[in-house]
Length: 335
Ligand SMILES: *[C@@H]1O[C@H](CO)[C@@H](O)[C@H](O)[C@H]1NC(C)=O
Ligand SMILES: *[C@@H]1O[C@H](CO)[C@@H](O)[C@H](O)[C@H]1NC(C)=O
Ligand SMILES: *[C@@H]1O[C@H](CO)[C@@H](O)[C@H](O)[C@H]1NC(C)=O
Ligand SMILES: *[C@@H]1O[C@H](CO)[C@@H](O)[C@H](O)[C@H]1NC(C)=O
Ligand SMILES: *[C@@H]1O[C@H](CO)[C@@H](O)[C@H](O)[C@H]1NC(C)=O
Ligand SMILES: *[C@@H]1O[C@H](CO)[C@@H](O)[C@H](O)[C@H]1NC(C)=O
Ligand SMILES: *[C@@H]1O[C@H](CO)[C@@H](O)[C@H](O)[C@H]1NC(C)=O
Image 1 (cartoon, rainbow, N blue to C red):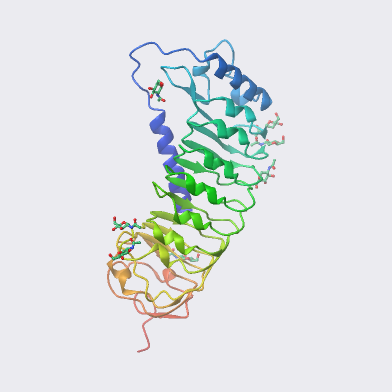
Image 2 (image 1 turned 180 degrees about the vertical axis):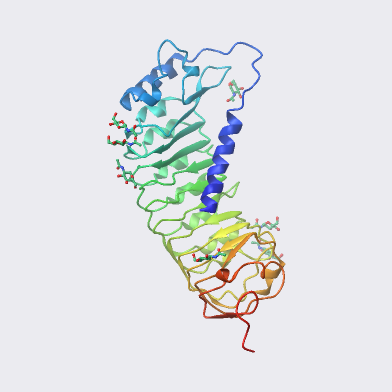
């Protein structure tokens, strides 16, 4: 949950940044007539909801609620519809706003249907957020055609099917949020082959299975949350002396491997791996970290908790329900 909130804050800060008033030295250009026409089609397609009541021909469409124009061109660059009483499907006409950079439908529980393929026409799109809606169908592979995407948030929907490997073609992605859906299948091998920026991965609360591909160890991920899936095998590829991972949540899966030899990098500040089947002992490299959070509970770990660093500042619930962990702050070891 902590990590989901962080992603939300990432989007909020980007949106706040984009909506800061810019000093206008000259008169703003009026709204482009084609864009206005398309917005009226979108409004109509959504059943003329009260939420879009300001979308009136008497008002320049750059001043409408939920949209933002480029002041020099009068073209619509943002469409952000959220928290309204809106039902129906995402209007395919959104694909006819050719200068759109941000497209957001958020917290609209009555928005249903699939993600329309017309969005592939939006070649300038950098932010795509369709979240907390009731979208169904797959995570479409055609999203990989949106080569300028910085962030993709499809969280809190009812999306099914597997994660399309083609997403790894996106070279500018900072974050992928597919958490809280009904996704199945494995994490694609291609996610170890992002060229350009390495995105934060938020894949929690799905039904993903299989081992995390070893290929993900080729990259330096910063944040990863795969909690609450049915993943198996080993997650140690994210660690190692020369890695830069900071936040990692592997909790509530079926990981099963020996933790004893894992070298945690000093960049790591948060590690949650509760409810798995990890065995072996806690490695001494944990004492070298500045940890804000640690949870290794409900595994099959054994042996003495290394003494030092931040390991004693956590309470016993960080360590409980293991096979035979002992030592401060937990039970004393029986020699
Ligand atoms: C607005 O359009 C102008 C001209 O195409 C471009 O130089 C500028 O970067 C755009 N501004 C934004 C905020 O997109
Ligand atoms: C969703 O639609 C139902 C049925 O029309 C309505 O009762 C409900 O208020 C709507 N909810 C929201 C949040 O728009
Ligand atoms: C949403 O709109 C529907 C139909 O217009 C209405 O019946 C319902 O009460 C509204 N719900 C909310 C939460 O405003
Ligand atoms: C939307 O999703 C919520 C939670 O998954 C569900 O309770 C609700 O019935 C759905 N609404 C529609 C209109 O499908
Ligand atoms: C990860 O980052 C570290 C530190 O910047 C660097 O030494 C290492 O080579 C990087 N590894 C990869 C796979 O990029
Ligand atoms: C980590 O460093 C070792 C030795 O410096 C190097 O052989 C290895 O390729 C590096 N691994 C990564 C993932 O950067
Ligand atoms: C660790 O996780 C377990 C299981 O979810 C939970 O009961 C416990 O409170 C957590 N402890 C800490 C310190 O996060």
